[in-house]
Image 1 (tube, rainbow, N blue to C red):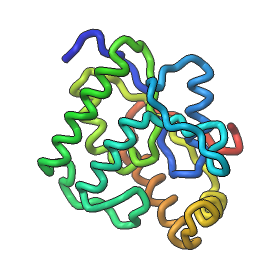
Image 2 (cartoon, rainbow, N blue to C red; image 1 turned 30 degrees about the vertical axis):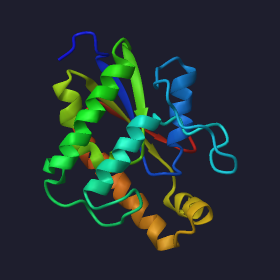
Image 3 (spheres, rainbow, N blue to C red; image 1 turned 90 degrees about the vertical axis):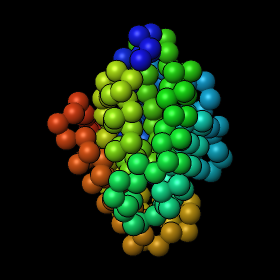
Length: 188
């Protein structure tokens, strides 16, 4: 374990289109480090930016693919999915990225809605590195999220609602007993 590694991480959790980008953008404006490689803003989708660490989000996507899933899969991940050798390889990539980009950060933040489903991998990874995770759970009305997903991705209302439910229930369940705070899109 590297003693110089930033000890505290803010992890923004919530379903896609819930305001996680807006919340993490506020953190960036407050001076909290997000890393140097962020996805660029996208016209008509997220004009001000996604505030997602592109390398880490790409690895998270690879992890979901290795688990036989994707970000918009409504089915749960298999039991013990994180023990797959390919996923363990991807986990080592995450460690290298955290060490590379947050080594000297006293406080840093990550945002990727995929992390709602990937916390069984992320939580032990961060603990092994001696990093205390503090969770920010962003919640937006499910109807608004489903409407936004329908407009952006062409998803059915039912699929949007199921994805909202799955992401939020996983984030809530997996952060119980841990440092966390809830915010709503309307509050932001």
